[in-house]
Image (tube, rainbow over all chains, first blue to last red; front, top):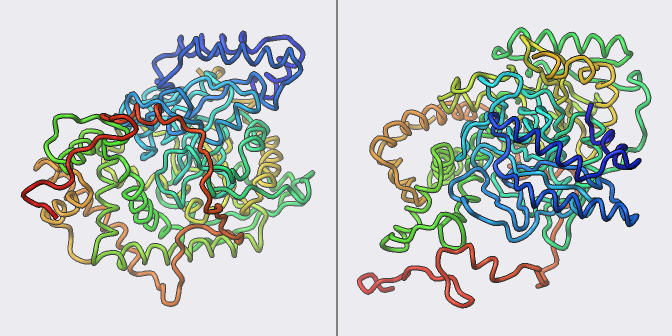
Length: 479
Length: 104
């Protein structure tokens, strides 16, 4: 299996150069054009990065990710490269600086192997809402890859890149990771600097990694995490684990019953229950817990997120950057034309909803109420973590759904029921593939204590060994 | 919760959001937004007496702040300006904010 770890070993011993490695991935992407994972891949520019990396290695200056290709969700700013956030509003926009995470990846020697497709401004759960076409699931191309970081999940699942970055506001890393059978982590809110991430919901957004193993995700998090006091104050860093987990017998796992609702497919339930049974057999203590405000968390999210969206997207006025509207009459007409032409229907819908819940007369009834319920959602997690080391749930109630199946906005929103509460509380969570249902991957969500992301990864790695998914069910073997 | 959104509400909100909504779109939005508001309306049933609002997850650590000091950004002015539809020298050009008829 081509993990970052195995590829790094090949580069280290000189079995392969970064240029050769990158050529292989670019050839794979060319051959697999139907999935629409990438929005931008300039082969010459990418090979130039790989050549520079090989030179650094030869000079004895290899970084932690030296020569390894990483795909980047197109809502993260990459200096000198297009950055569209999947929106026609930013068509042709060239980022004038690197996001902090990109700067850190580059400093560690990583190669930016392309910018990946997403739901416009990261708003969606399927990567159908991009201004640049639908991305397809490599397990079944009549199905969605999940979203909004669908392009990044597909790049890793289809072996077009060994790892990728995404962003997660309500599940946008974990749900596509689950649908595509890869590992995806949403770090603790404040673990990773958001400087240079195109903002959606600023009290919820977090950048995180996709990989083919828990270990690869940890490798990326080690590089990405930490404050960036020179640029902003969006991150505080993480705890180093106080201890390592050698045995699942040391671990108490909580299973919250609210995450096993009516919408859950029987095939997903079977996989999750079998996994829980195997963890029990391996010696883990598994107990039932309750997070009573789970259902309200989704309603809370669909007030707070659009409110923040309407504020964050006010900056797209067609004046300093973005869609260029020249024939408009007054200044106000110009704003309206740029915003109406530049934004797609889902983005406009969320801006309108957010504007409404923040408008005079409705603020207390919606926004303030939602913030109060948010306190209760967070308190649920605080209480649960007094009893358990980690919480275990299905990442999504279903496997990947068919393209076009959720045309009604509310039905799409309900798909986020198991991932949204985690962003409301700010705690870290990852999705780990745990089996197949009707030939499609099922994701297991593990939720950890705040700032203990490395401990969460440590526990996840033990669970990954027991599941053994990566060995038994690679996509290439099932089709 | 309260009354459903009316077509006039949509027009008002669109104006606040600096968006134009076509007649056809308004019809569709009316149904969709009312469905969503109906769904989020379940929060009214939650007892929140005495509960502090949470604006962002603080997670037990002090909120980081930046010193209020100007430092070089490293950004190149020309690169920033080149993204604007129109500019002149070091300045972005915009339409007149005030016109003769509505001078403030």
